[in-house]
Length: 325
Image (cartoon, rainbow, N blue to C red):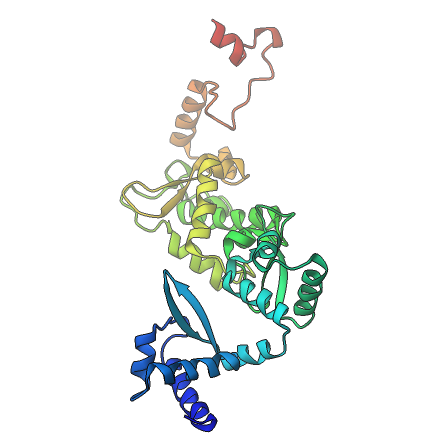
């Protein structure tokens, strides 16, 4: 087989391999089946031609050699690199979206620090690779391909900006999510108080099924473009869990990923208190409200309650004294 025939058959082999996913690893028998009438000797020449043109990579799976095609665009990059740069690039490419720690990279390529730094600098300048910071280990130098997006494990997900926890963004999203859930739970609590509404019955019935679901909250955040980064349902679920721990919302019993606001959370946020205006109550409601307030006692579980300031300090029993008794 002359050089022209090898080139023609190698291009044909590459074309057949390109019909499979780029990540496909071919074994020797699969390659022979792609080119009719080819022998093992012929296949060695074809694969060597593709390797020389940087259009194929070799890898080991167990004790068997596997063959993988390289895109034409990727091949053009590799042809501009020195052998040292190509070796470094291949190891970084193999690390995918996780990236590779500089210390591990050095142990794999076994180059002198001066050569290593020169190659890395050259690859960075050509925008073939980039340096990123790992959230878990911010002092480590991690390299990955320039056109790859780091995985969430590397970046920390949408809650991190430049490897720093974005507390302001988190608080804003928590506020929006809580307000959305609260309005689905107590729609009248966020509007001006009206005399024709009974504040003591301003809640949904037990069989109400219009509470905020995880999918509704996620769609609301997305449609209103509240976040510049895309938030998945898992991201919103973590926000809801934080609000549950803060006692601002709770899960609806008997439903999956469905939430309702706590009345205490509404009061703590400064809403709902307008219904305490006695001018909005009729006589029966005033009597009932007065009775409730008269029987009301301080409870450590009532976050909005405070000890009566009229009580002398010496008569106040605090938690530690109460426990000892």
